[in-house]
Length: 481
Ligand SMILES: Nc1nc2c(ncn2[C@@H]2O[C@H](COP(=O)(O)OP(=O)(O)OP(=O)(O)O)[C@@H](O)[C@H]2O)c(=O)[nH]1
Image 1: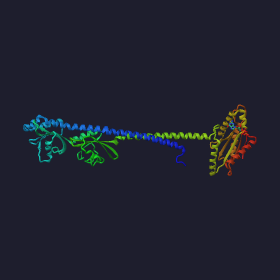
Image 2: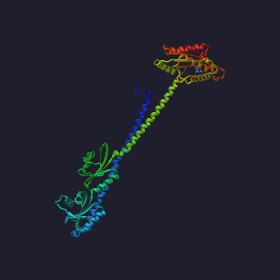
Image 3: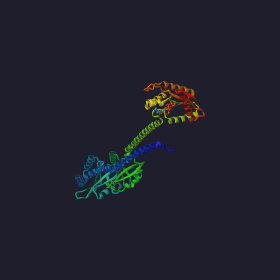
Image 4: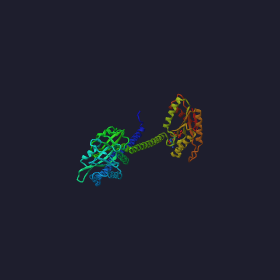
């Protein structure tokens, strides 16, 4: 036996084609969209956001550089130093004014001559060559450039990590006379970072040259170093490479793909890392894919259901057509024989009487000859309707052939079948067939009951002989045997 019935093969093929077609278009469009989004993230969105964040940060760093430079160039400050640091309160007021005006965390001045640390709150302490925490001053003094950005704990400010801009002050002849500058705490930098992170909807963080995470807008970073961060650790070595040209990297974290844009900021000796979760960005497209698949499945289901319904309806129609006599709309002989064989099987299991009535129109040839074939047909059609009305739905009525009809009566003994046959005979004989000339139509009937020794052949032969007897007995009568 074939695995799939022949009738369903086409349907299965159509279903497979529909599902494969829908799925492949949905998946192809998802693939194209996700590729477009990925390339947009890598080539546009992330680099542009990183550039924006970088330039915002540069702005924030260079503003204090500018302030420090202005301070170093200030003639009041230089004159005050050259004239021997008289009236320190004047300078302290000056530093205070700068701090308030430019909203820096700190301002400071260290003259080379006295090495006092001037601060908006006063003279704090002296810079000492032997104090390692003051080493920055001596580095700044020797530096080739005019200024340098330093990240150090501020010992005047609870040792908080602070970004200092240390600017050399030179007299009018270009001799070094001190260092001045401003400081920003990392707290304010961290605030800036969070602001950029939210504005650009990216994770932004700074790491130093050893991979230590200095600042982050990403609260879920648990480890202090990128060499320890899950996922990120795989690209840590690639990040720490002193390349000022932005580079594009990516890593996997919990089945999610993270795109990373990183660059070295020489002014800070830090790395700026901006990252975007590609999987999160693709989620709406994924949602559309699932909706597409659901719609595809629904459409496939509806199409297949409609096809099954239409195939079944056609099948039923064809079966009915094949089983029906086209003139009388009764069952034809083949259909009758199928039903009869089923009845035989049922009866062999569950004994019950089965009777058969075979009937034939008397002198039908004359009707045809005298009134024409069409009129003959009309008589057969009316006769079929009358027979239908005289029998129950459980009875099997069929056109046996020509002007002969057969009636199979289940669970009906011979004498009841005979009574029914007589009733039918009387109905036909008294019916007005509305013929163009006055003529009564009668039928002859043979009635018999199936016996244990019968097969279908012997049963129908006997009934036929009984019908023949009825014809012999001057017709319009019932002969039961
Ligand atoms: N109009 C019409 N005539 C049919 C049809 N089928 C068979 N006949 C005719 O029915 C007639 C049957 O004639 P016979 O077998 O001689 O029997 P009868 O004239 O009825 O005579 P008895 O049966 O002996 O009473 C034939 O002339 C067939 O051509 C049909 O579908 N339509």
